[in-house]
Image (cartoon, rainbow, N blue to C red; front, side, top):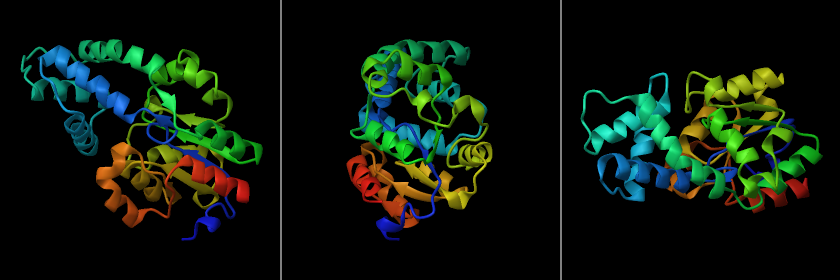
Length: 245
């Protein structure tokens, strides 16, 4: 479909967070690499850890994605003790992650400008992410680079976080819950996503999806291109589209 038709008759814009608004995908890969190094004394490449994450995400069907993932990592890379404690390992992961979350994560270029412009034009804004509440609060209140530009709690009409859903993307639950709580129809919305699982979640909810690729989603780009409704290269291009409408 033509990009100029993208916002026609749309009332709400539903955003993903990681890799879409925040430039943090590789930062989380670095966190997992450091976790494996500390727990298993093994150095894993960023390409390998990214592959591990997506494979685990696609196959996951339990109740706690992150606890499941840390157990998966330590078993895979050399720690096969039978008494592995998921809660303890998750705490160790978050000790490592804290510095990255508070100091290294940044908005993607033009993300605050895009969100503020949509808000100024009267669009309803929703956010659906697998980030948990602890991490999301740290982004908005402890990460100065983020908080000085825009506190997301102040701009989004509804935010759905990890704790708010049972099923993770590509299951459509996060977007179905957003449209229900915002009291809007799928046809009123546009989802903005970077990853294959995110694009699938939006499409599975019956919503048109705009893909803006992230470096960590490039391995799935052909699959994304086959199902997505619209595609732009970056948020600067999206800002230009908004300002033209």
